[in-house]
Length: 179
Image (cartoon, rainbow, N blue to C red; front, side):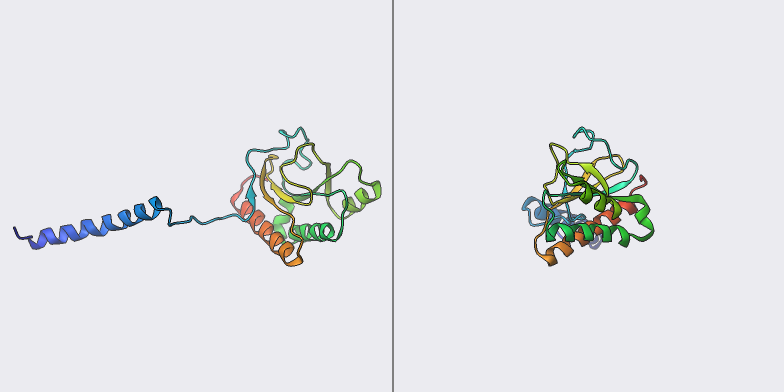
């Protein structure tokens, strides 16, 4: 039985469409493909200010939140500076974002005032936080915690972490119609 020329063309067309599907199925089933990551921070699963019994310190705005440790040493000071610089770097989008610092209840009043004077909104540490002390997060205008970023000790890692947080918040602001 010989294959006619029009049957050969038909088989080649079918093969041209089925071969990529088969190869894709093989890659997925063997887990050879790793999907791309569009965000740099760690996704926070279903956590909001309301869940933590806290009032949203800046409702209707995106928030870059920093969990202030008991003692603010060099790393903490650098984190606060980078957080403030990230807000400034957003340019015209910075009106949609507020820097929030979660402070311990035992913090000295003069330290609180210094933070307020630097443009930070202050809120008390909740009993249960989705981030650790010294870490930061992005919170949406509805008070839902979206992404977290771990504290980095090395200066180069701090700068990278700050840049990643900046890129994530910028992307969220572009995609969001809220806040």
